[in-house]
Length: 129
Length: 89
Length: 240
Image (cartoon, rainbow over all chains, first blue to last red; front, side, top):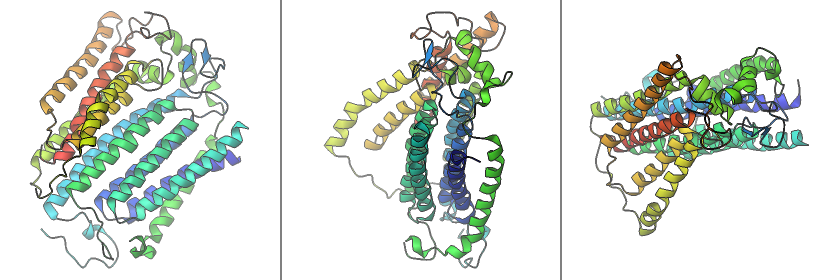
């Protein structure tokens, strides 16, 4: 295992772990959606980092050479980047739908907390209808 | 040389991103958490540039840190700013 | 504020999250980082890298993959965006009314004058990004979102301005129809849906090149800009 591998994948997965922790431990709906966004960012970073090739340039050519004058074959993998581009745009759409559902939950119950679904002893206040 | 620069920039930026993400999850003020989440997205777009993905970096910078933050702030404006729980605020 | 959290109750969550991360890390160590995985003969990326410049005429490989090789997938993606926008409209119209007590703070002169000055420049930059999608980083999605962020600035600075939902719906429908129409042109002339029938037109690296790719990206840019503006305007109004 090389040090680059350890640093890159380790840091990205720590970011993903922070997102998963937020989803599991918070009870506020908007905070849940926000944690989901952090997890999504981490997963996109992970997918793009799989396609990275050290020492090569971005997947754009300028005539017969790459952007930094390297030969035309010397570029990183463009396929994960195209897929992640799709994933980012779709992610915004799902976040917007989730947020408007959260606003609807707030309008009909008066709270954003998911008290009755949670574990632990703090179930004292019932959701008011 | 390029590899050392890559690792140094990556370590600094990812430590910053992870710290901001932890603070965003812990903070009771949802507006503050949203701003911190936008910061995580901005750092992620810098990391995309390091990974030689300029297209994805542009999409992440404009969607992740601008539009998602605006939508979250507007949703918070329609609901409540502070998370309920043990303490005051 | 944050120290009031009872950390001990989220320890199981932290442990579970770290366990998931460690499992994925163990899988990704096998994949390797920074290795030249695309050089193997027969891999999909290798096929794209070797032939894309001749087949599509696009200088940007990501654009070639998104619009040309995976064009049908992109059509599905803009359909998902349309469904999200329409679904938000449906949910918003069914919401119970919120409290109207929140009065917006009137904007200052600097904000209004600055917004009127900056908005045309933002729209120009967004158009530049999606027209040059086949030559430089960027494309329809990025350019459309830049235009939407400019309109959102206007929406935030002038609170009494109502977003023109009819005009937005019209432009988004026309852009979506022209995307599908370009696909049908490919079907009629080349025999394949979204076939890039005029890919040889122009010289690679110039603005007029890459055949139908700039046209499709212009349609996507207008559609994404209109959809994102409508999405956020609905979220702002809560009752629009």
